[in-house]
Length: 231
Length: 325
Image 1: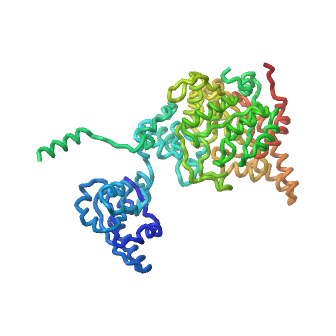
Image 2 (image 1 turned 30 degrees about the vertical axis):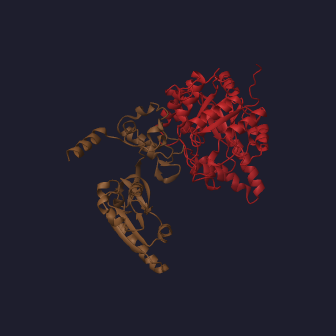
């Protein structure tokens, strides 16, 4: 899932303080699971802004709402008439949601209430860890299911650097060395020797370095077109 | 010969090679590099010109190497994967070759968070590159030299002829993989290897045995890394804070005793510890050179280049071989 963290309140206040009618708009999927931007968090944040406005003597109306996914129009379109009655939307969706809504909403600004951080998992309640970098060319079958791009600080493709210290990365004792994990996992699978094969320089064009990416499923587009014609 | 560098010639001659290290300054003033080049000249076969080590901005390795080369010191230019993509790396190395530089050491580079281990501000917010890793970079240099091709496949009218080096951390985690890591570097085309600093010779012997069993000592020239312990605190730091380095307790105690014996006289304490540090270094050099498959030593006297002369002489490694043609 996409993991996010709410922005510091002072930063949020700096964004919203000059507006008269603000909607804090949550998203109930990924960012709700990581307690950053679901309906509950949107409601709390709306209250905090109201209290701050009262303290500062600023005349401001603050509402809140949430939909299931900000990344698909069918979820947020039913609410658009209501949303357009505000003069600022403070979105607590991930950056995808903020971008997508900003393109659809018209003359109203959409500001981010959270920082979108990474694609991660929840190893235990209250902890979220980055496991994938979305590079567009997966090689997890070669590395025991542990990603050297996302989990090695230097995204090294052919083994650890000299900075591994007791299984941890040179940047912090709180960060596992990705290559230590890969080597241990390959030993467990009896496949350590597989790592001797040299991975050549990567083609990074499948990642963001090739420019903003899109995926087209022609069979689905054709299907939708036919359905529309039928209707 | 692959490059015709002095380092390559010494290695081919079968005599133990000696490389040293020259750290360029955080300054646009060339004189420090020039002075250090004069200090090292004649006491090593080539000197590594470090490439923004510990992620601190300094005179670049290639510019430093060109300055040293002008003074008659053969440089080993370093290229970190941290700071450049493959386009910049190849362009810079074509330039290095055009300037007469013949050795290149490929390294990952300390993470930008380091900033001289926290002693300087550094640039912890910098974006790193890691377009290619060290093993891939070794392969790129070999392809440029032997096939006259850039990584992307375009032809080079004149190929850069580098003697290609890589590093090895024999005692680092995960220790089972370290010999295989060396194998990969050799398979990629590393002509010489400089190891991380060795204090625990026993661990190094065991890893060298594994390297010999893979036949690596015959396919590359392994130079044992020696980091000169200048004082007790530095040695303690090397033991506790530097990844892949362990210092035997007896060695720590030996330098601690010297420090304690010197008492409160700071000048005396410094001199006594430095003298003992040089003794330890010479002993380490002898022990490392005795290990089968070792072809030389890489001596790092960090910010203490003046110690190299005494060390190389005391180790019986002076004068260095010279070639007339």
